[in-house]
Image (cartoon, rainbow, N blue to C red; front, side, top):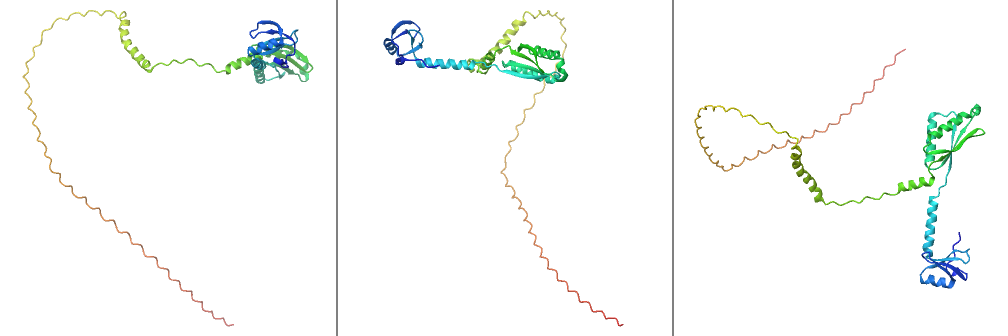
Length: 302
């Protein structure tokens, strides 16, 4: 989109002028419109060049351009490009494999994407298409909370296909994910003085014993009056002789500290044992005498 003409770029003799608040000024000459724009410190922007005469508005062009860019960016961010995912099944699929592939289908649908489910027939399986329809119908029932059948099962050569659509649009899913990522506002924390916190348990402890009798008063039954017992004659007790006063403890004579006798001098420690004299070095062994040469034996006479 080309940028609109502003101020002196407008080359027409008359324009239909719109005020900054959207009020209609009427058809004026372009020179008068430029003068009004300069007096208001605004720009004269051509918003409808194909009209006769062209429509111009007094506005802040920089602010207008910034707001237009922000709107376009927001539109691109909220734009949802639906992707068609594809997943394949076999007619004799194992229950565990079926559960795994069903989990993939649920993940695709929860993300807002369409899913194309394909069943591949091999050999004589092509003669039993009703088994494929039953398998696809079972899958559609299992994911009914996240998607719906957009295209019913149909045979396409050796394959059978069905398309599932998500119940939530992709833009809604993106909006929910963006709201979850945004930080939550912190709650206002009220500062309580430490004195109030310390006095609160003490006040509760004082009020507890006072309230206890009031609560227990209506519950307690009146105590029965005790019958008076007949008076018994006092037993004649023999008058015990007064105990003789204990003699006053004689004061112990003050221990006269004798002059501290000097302690005997510590006995000197025995002198250390003399160091053992080194043993004399071993004498070198005398060399053995060389063996005497053997005497020659006399030759035997013939």
